[in-house]
Image (tube, rainbow, N blue to C red; front, side, top):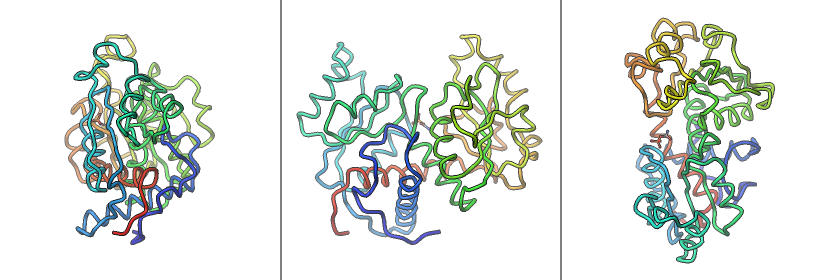
Length: 320
Ligand code: CP
């Protein structure tokens, strides 16, 4: 893998990261290359440029998170920032203050970067249009989770090399998954072919909108055949009560990944999951914790990817 230096702050064509749809391949590759160089530095204990020193960063989380929130905070601290953390439940948002007022007030305290998670699709894009600050999406409703898509691509690239022509299968609740959406935009831009499978009620209605490299499979077996990587999505329990999902037992029977099913993919195919896992539902523990699983590598790469995004979008040029 590369031993390159991180990319130069401000060198991307984008100013915010509301999603991966439409992000040029050159920007995706620049982020992944920079993330790879940060990952190598973190692994070896080498110094990284403190390009967020003096930059005021705010993590705005209106929805729960473990991996994304903590890895953004870790990334910010590694780059020299002292982030502020906002959670909706302890704030005046709980008294009814609007999102726009919340952000404009925090911006008046000097905030320059907002990392935003919200249950409503479109919030990061809206805030990017309302503030002069850099806005990075940490997951918005069923729309996008761009840093998750990037960390998944980085993890696949580390094992598979170039993603051009690689076959990636995504199984689960595709329709409501921001992870699936960000993945399919990034993977198709990077040249991979994506196959989708899940309950008919949870597949996208208009998959042709995702372009020719994204296809809905005809069966689970066909989805898994010759796959280089298999990504399972978390089944959201609330779908059960909305009638969109059979029972969890039935889901496991029809869609869960076990050893027999994984053998349909290429030998050594990667197994990915964004977390949190419902063990025994979308994936059995032997596979989640087995030799083909890269689930914890995804989490480690999350720090490097978030460092790369923040460094490139909001970093200040500095010496190491
Ligand atoms: N993958 C992911 O977004 O996990 P969290 O909800 O814990 O951040």
